[in-house]
Length: 312
Image (cartoon, rainbow, N blue to C red; front, side):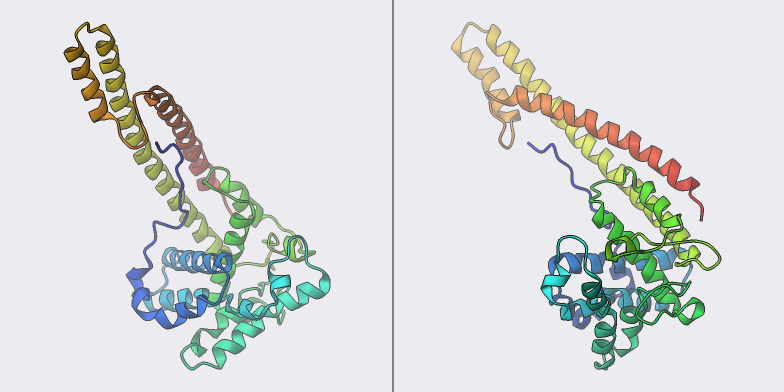
């Protein structure tokens, strides 16, 4: 009996549209050196970067290039000591300075490899901000390559989603609203939230607007997936309702043969861990799950309305 439904934020996008599966085997092999969470983040950022580029109307070769840079943006973390990379809680000032060096480490790694050299900018610039408040070099405006500006938007968004432990897109608008607000980073943890949108704002507004559209797409996809799951639950309710009806008829019978007839019908309809003793509990669970998922669908539709009104 399955009553839980896990939604993958990034499942709608198939990166193979750009031939990445064939072209990135060498680059992806490097990601095996990253820890599991960093690798997932890297893949998410690449996925988001690719999709943001699509909404920005970028040419196919640029989308491929930006996505490759995004895959490699955090590769320098392989050189960060584990006691810093995996530290619980806020980093000290000294530790944060070491963490910031992953941008330079990643850049050097790429520049020293002929196959990776052209993608080095993703590693170096993905923490730079348009207002000059980023790192490692504090460059600003057009000094930051366009692909890296896009990667920065995807990187911060995915970091916030991970930090806030979202399992659905309900209330995801709160994260995007936080991205719109002007704020000043004061520490490593707060820096993940720090984006401002004055004339000298920290991130590219057009890329953020494109991210809004990507998140709406993902939310609509979650709605469709949840509806499909509800349909599955309804089939299970219908099946177990028939089991219950057979059970009633069985208990009315006086002959053993008639009782066995309805009992065999019940057994045919039962699946998985369901049995004659627990099917009523299973039926209740399925009905409860339908109520929960229908509420989720309503909440997601409301979230879409909020997302469509967001402006930056």
